[in-house]
Image (cartoon, rainbow, N blue to C red; front, top):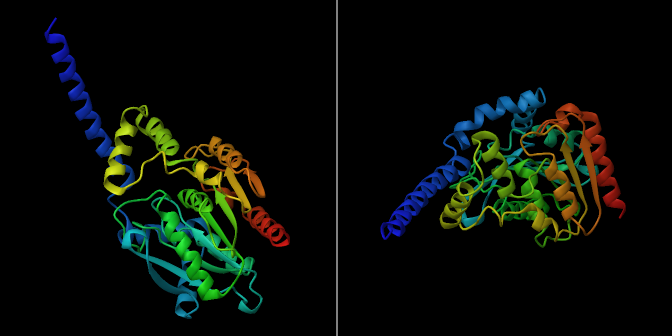
Length: 318
């Protein structure tokens, strides 16, 4: 009988070590994918064209004319962060400025369909950055929106300095949408007027818990707990604190929530969680029937433009 506590202790030690090893693996798998950044540019250029044909030719053409420009800032934790910007199609009658924020594993190329929508269709100035560890930006891990929100806040200041415009909207898709929602809970200058989130997750914990179950058939405990602990020790943040819901509770500026009801990557249920969390200020919800993840624009391009334009017009009249 005296051996039982020792055996139990040994068993628990083995379990703890196994959990730690799996936690490190999951943290690396989720936050430090091997193929990223500049190495992944060509894939994402092709992806941009698949989402809206002619996007990269449009981008290259504006760049050749000197209309589309690159810039960098010193981002959070002193990493160099890259972004592109261009004035509205008719700068003299620009309707405002839009910051477009990309998703996980993507970069500023992928959501050129939104950049083109804002610049060419809605006549907005545009700025679209690479988040850290993506595109031409530096970084040591995918920040899942949590630290990215600080960089996007800095980009808002940069955009304001460039365009001298007092109506700015932040529009993100997927992880970019989570970044947008997380940013919305922090104090912002008065010229940041509105937010649009398209298929963002309610928290990093909720999203990774779903992915862990869906892809690996594993429960959250103890793997996700261990991975979150590894993330906290390495990078200074945990999966549960990185919460769109908690930040939305502090947001008092208008927000449009978009989500496809066939989304099987960021579950459709996250939409209601996010929407309900915002209890202050104006909000709208648009559910896109049959749209899978980050597919709402591709499935309903004209309706998407109309919803965004109508929402921004309402905000301007408030």
